[in-house]
Image 1 (tube, rainbow, N blue to C red):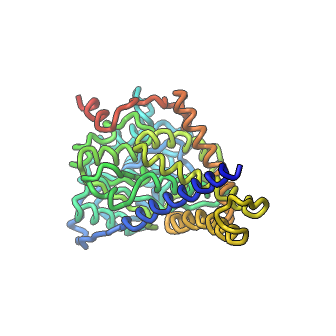
Image 2: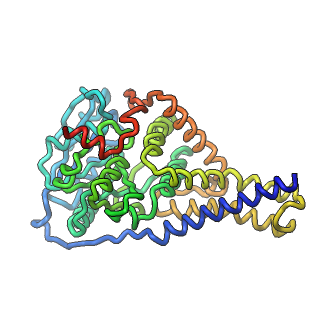
Image 3: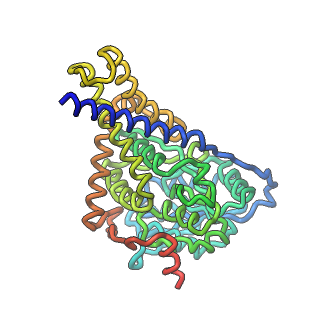
Length: 402
């Protein structure tokens, strides 16, 4: 038992060390690097803002209020509704925007991607912005992102909105995105078109040059992907197009799941399987290391206090202090990551193993569901987890363009 315990603790230290070596690498190589042109209004290109919707009556009003208040005159706003039975389209029409209703979802398409594609077909802009109905935009946000897109000659600029939260399960969003951050890689690599190992995007705010979007094949190329944002980001890398991802700004914000826990559960149950399928195995392994660290940190903390044995690397009091620090550092890493990206709650930070137990349960359910080939649901629509098995976005694009 002494030797076995020593092995466990040694493995624990190795996993923790690996986690923080990788995390320090991500932090050291992650810079936003905003660039501005300070163009006069008359030189700003025409932008098409496309908002896909389905049962969004509680969100669409706030979203369109912010979009129509943008300090940017040369734009059109297109709402593409997939057949809402609530007041979504009635509210949208009150804002004088172009409302398109298309509830005939073609076989092989995911609803959101199809809505984006329909909006693209109706659009006229040199620049396309796809954004979600639950987002709110500050007046200067569009000019900032357009100028950056132009100044860097970027094909896809994706911005991760600041995440608001009120209900307990909304704070779990941060833990999900922390793991996504670990799997996505440093922003410097994400934003390097020749480094195909790292890619990330947020479907809540995706801006394309029209030429770049069409060169990629757009949403048609990833029509069956359950995570269209990551699939498009990966497609950018496969085609060596410039991707720029920004994830610690408050110029756009959102409250993703203000309704019920079941909405949160279904959304991530759908997204996790699709997201894991796009990641290289070694990045998935790093996520697993962080999950192991999260689960074992409280265990070793309790053991160091109630049952110290001769196999412990440190003596009794040093062991307690070290294990307290190792427990707290996990929460601190999460807190420092999330503090500029979403609303924090100190209770969730301190007692992160409880929050992560819920998150891990959802991850396992999603993976099991996907492995069994079961369908996932979202807004009364059902999608297969067997979509385009073993095919990369590039292969899907080539197939779609034939």
